[in-house]
Image (cartoon, rainbow, N blue to C red):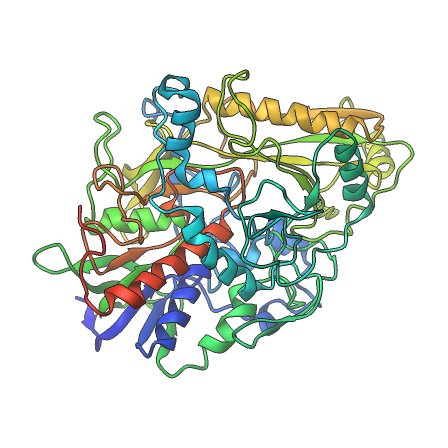
Length: 588
């Protein structure tokens, strides 16, 4: 039996990026907020000091910052005809654990989606006709436009101090920036990072081919910066320990560095760590949330009543909790009906490894989001009609790391071990680059999330079951992007290029990205979306759900900037409309 606690105004489930943004906003408005986080407390000074935070074995190999599969896991299969089996070791993606969430270990690539990404179904249907799209593709519009989100993109970027070069200021194209981006209301808060040798050479080659290279927008700062909350960030030191690592230099934007120092001082905020929410509680009508039930680290069960519930956990855990709480109609792959679990999407990345004889790149001089990119083949920036696929991605020479345990570049044909392998690693370590493509992943009827009928977690609840595979459209796109990437790399004069497009079935083993999306998507129709355009549940009006969970499909960019912009957009509606008159913000 759960022990009932005194009620609070707001309960926030998960204290990562969106949970921190929500808690700061609601406490600033004078509301009492309780945040419940499954993982441990994490603080920059004590958890990530530069004396030991760049520990590749601890963080990159042993995955110290991530959920242990003994805590919870999921089951995976490629299609509904297969039997899903539990994931015993994280591979393709890494699920965050602890205060700061994925904002602790991200690379800080801070991309805005293209304006066309938000109206994707309309854009592609009008340009190519409905028959051009695969019949089982389930993409749809977001229900919100780029122009509506632009002020909230701006707000997050100025919170983070994002470093970059604007390509479109108030509709005017700017030199050295991305000419394809949507219009910005003002420049980036800090200049773009200085570029290493490899990205500079790659950009010169791209420019010679007629492309418009630009520096990748970065949450690894180029200089010191004080954000609107009064928190100061430092400049990046190019250590190359970003992805999978916390930043002890205060130079990678994260909740610990940008928001939590302010939030934790507020008397109307409380964080409860190492506590897992097991259910969102509903009243007897099933139309209103009354709070949450959670279990603490000692196994004690508690009920936290609240007037408003914000579900801000990682994408998959958001979906699982909605299903376990009986909120919304579960998706049925056989009928195509239902909304919870629908439209799971991922990311489609590829690369082209290049070996040189006469150049030293020193790729260990790196940061999480340094590099030069082109956007000519992203989204619908080019005519897809001749190629038989839709979607795209950015292409770039992005120099994130060359950490010694996992970075051992050798040409094809090299022995797998022994003296010859060691010599090949020595000869190629400094003179090899791995530029990449970062492609979209559109949604399909047979890609979804549901509760596993067999396997349970430590609380006896069904595990989340992931059914996903790459489709022909995305594999064609990956081959196309990889070919364009290799053409640019070839102009740099390598000895050998090895093209590595995405092929075959999706494997849960090799790492790709942690950009899992969908499952409780936003939209304008409650028959095909779980949330309205303000991220409010169609079924439970005082429940709001944040994260990449909201995406009807994934674009050719990293998701965090858009996740945060949508959160700020939601909060604006909560403050201006919901708090004054609680109820549905959109009527079906």
